[in-house]
Length: 78
Image (cartoon, rainbow, N blue to C red; front, side):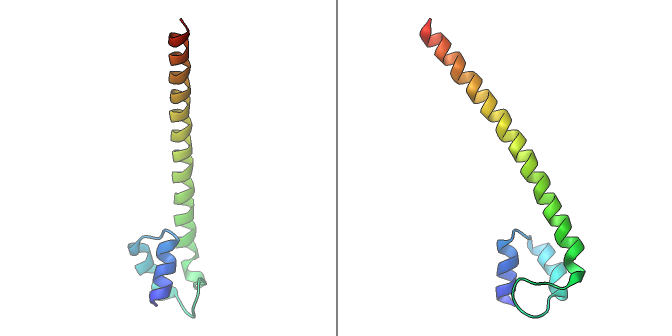
C-alpha cells in the first residue's frame, strides 16, 4: 500500500486524488483497476494544459529577454 501511494505521488497525483483511486487498486505495482481511468485521464489532461500554459509563458519571457538584450547591445554600440 505504501509503495503504491509513493508511486502515485511520484506521478504527480495529489493526495486527494490518491484517496479517491486507492479503493480501485488491486494487486501491486503501477496498474490500477479500470475504474480509475477517467480520473487519471482527467489529471493527465490537466497537466497537459498546465504544460502548455508554462510553455507559452516561457516563450513570452524569452522574447522579452531577447528584446532587452538586443536593446542593450544597441545602446552599447552607440
